[in-house]
Length: 334
Image (cartoon, rainbow, N blue to C red; front, side, top):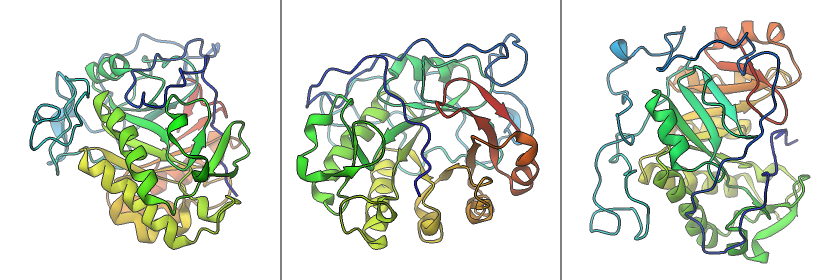
């Protein structure tokens, strides 16, 4: 059962240009207003830097090997795009070079986070990690969050075709299977690595060119869905490891989204986990190996209130909060 309850259509369809894989998309506007602030508490003036809340590294006590936000783009200087020794393709916007191999961000357990895929990003939420849509937010949004000391995760769909994305025409009909249950979305035939790898690489290049620190690839458990293809668990392992390799080659951290059955096999390949509703379905213990390995688990519940899951989530070291299904700015953290 796929529990991805967070899809949203952009406010306006993007230009249907097949080659526009590295666009700087305008962020959506008009996020829902609540009487309470985005974090579920009365509105206050946001701090300019990452908070010193429990589980949040303080800049003065950051663990060795954990990169601190640079005043400019994250990471260290890489060769110019298109030059020998650079993995950045020609034409990539300058100014956001990827960190060198081995220097990618490693999110640790307990980091507070914000996950917003709907509406213009509310940058006032005082947490050290943001997870936002990669296509719908341009480099200026990422840079603004970096200026406040935030790390930023690039949400993309890596397992199914969406007809409203600007690169949708680049995906052949033969790659598209059954409907996922979301309008305009079809499962990928993940067995066709030779076709999907360059398309996913282009999306990851987009994330890197905008300055993101990590990627969150969605719908990466097609093997246990009605995809329209005879996919096996091994097909999914190969595909997910391919995604991890693409991210790491670009200096990006990568999160394993759900796919609980394959956590034991994929734990070494992924830098953190993103989980939906493990408390609702009594599955949180299955995600706990990430924390035991020193890797963050970014977790949300949609139906349970915080008093129903926060106690166990905290005991497991998860970064947990309640969100609305549309994943707008509203949040109620543990």
